[in-house]
Length: 471
Image (tube, rainbow, N blue to C red; front, side, top):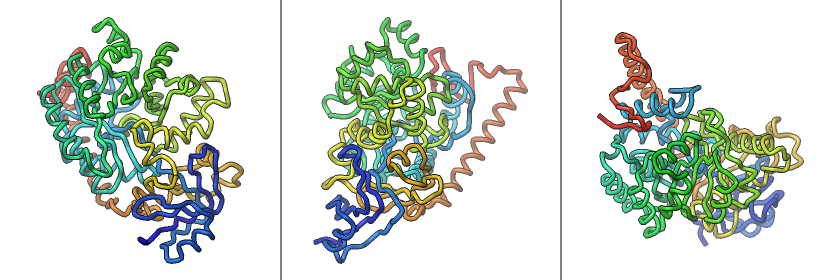
């Protein structure tokens, strides 16, 4: 028998069976998998030679899954705030990306994001950004689980200059990383308004052939609908349906502008929805109708979005916002219950990625993706209801330990595979570089009397569709 590890905790919240809380239990890990879940005394007797991790004041949860982020954008945290989505993207973020994004930028930004996410209990993230090969390599090196999106957009970018190049380079990444134990590869078309009908049809065909998920921004703002009606004479969901993209492989992010008929269609087509409440609130884009989606039986997960629009990657904080917002908007205090929200952070996310047989709950045979929170803090005392404390009271600072596939990536708040000091130093260097460049552009614009929404912004042209074309 291979050496076992016992994680001995005060509480285990396995997520399935729903609502179960196990007191004074141990989770037994062998070869990266969960072998048994037993009362602590019984586990010690069964595995007398096991390595023991004693966390007497802690709750053990399945690792949290961030279902939508743009990891490298940690390097643009706070770069542009307090403005609507269109201005934020076209006048600030896209021009900055055209100037600065590179393989090195993506590597450093992803590593900074993973450091933040692991310290907040996240064991897997679903990403969408340029240089997906850099993200995959960085995640694999750190031992973190990731779904890496192949960026698809009709306009030239730092990653590709034509639709054919997006597909060619993306499929090369899929061939390289598609069979890695920790890495899943998805198609990641940016949005309906940045993808042509030909591109969407091709993605739909490849998704079906290769059984690959499609991770996409959808119905994020009212402008999305207006643009679609003007240019295609169809609402975005109708356009997606016409191309065969409304199905169980679609992970639809934001979805703030859903009508009752839209919700029925999403449910009928088994589409997965990702709720990003803080980013949507900050950009005043709208609010995903979570209570209606849950009532309809739609599978909903939670994402942080990127740190440039959130401005953090803290899933516990996101969960608290989702729960409170759901109740406030629906007028129903039972809507968005702690168990609903806990499912969204774990098993619902795993289901959206087709990984619910491997992760998302603490069950025998599943991967040992786990996170432990110290509930002895005054902020989480006394304890009457463990899931309630996790969702409504706990802070990500209480996350002490994280395992991915049985490997301990966070030990007593210390990262074991990421050099945090070096990562922060690199982030500061990028901050200086980007800040100096931005200051120079603003000074040039002021000297020439240029308006902020001029035709040329920092070496990138912004067209009338709100997309960026590299010079």
